[in-house]
Image (cartoon, one colour):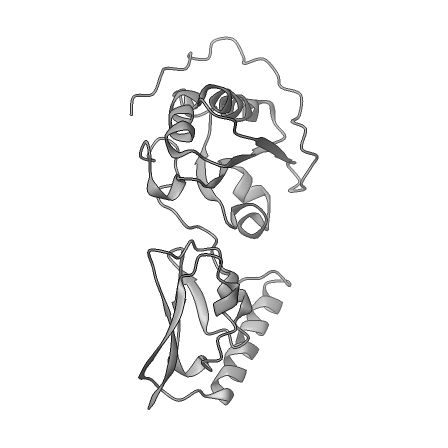
Length: 236
C-alpha cells in the first residue's frame, strides 16, 4: 500500500539516537552509528521522531510499504522488554551512540569532517569497559577519540592540538581511569587544548576501578616509573 514513511539522510545523521528513543513503536534502530528503519510495519507514520532530530536528518516520503501492524509492534516491544529484563535491567538493545570512525587517535585523519565544530570525547580505552553506561553517559552527541598513553609510545598532544585547531572543536571531555598511568591522557588533552591556538574548554571525568563515576578532579598522578621509553612525536 502507498503510505507516508520515514526516511533518514545519512549525511546529516549524527548518530545521537534521539529519534530511536522518541519512536514509541521501536521502529528505529542505530546501525553503524546511523538511524535506520528496521521494519516498515513497525512505523505508524505519525512522525514522533521528526522533532527529536537535532540535525534535520529525518523527513517523510510517500511510498509503497507494508501496512502498520499494531500486533507485530506489541510483540516486538514485549520481546525487547524481555531482553532488557534478562540482561538485569540494563538496556541491552539500547542504540549505539558512535557517530564517527575511526576512533583511535593514531588512526584518525588530521581534520575529519565529523570533528569540525564538535563536542569531543577523548577517552582512555579502559573506561568503556569499566563504566556500564558509557555510550549513553559520555558518547551521546560527541565525536569520539580513544587511546592509551601507557601502551602507546606516541605523543598524543601534538596530533590532538593540530586536530582541535584545524577543526575548531567546541569542547573536550576527557574520561580517564582513577589510576596513575591515565594521567598521561589528561595531560595530553590539556596540553593540546592549550597549544591549539583557540580557547577550548576541557572537562575531566574520572572513573574508578569499581566502575563508579568520581568527581571531575583527576586522581593524584604518580611520576612515570624509571626505565620507560620516552614519548616520540607522532607524524600524521
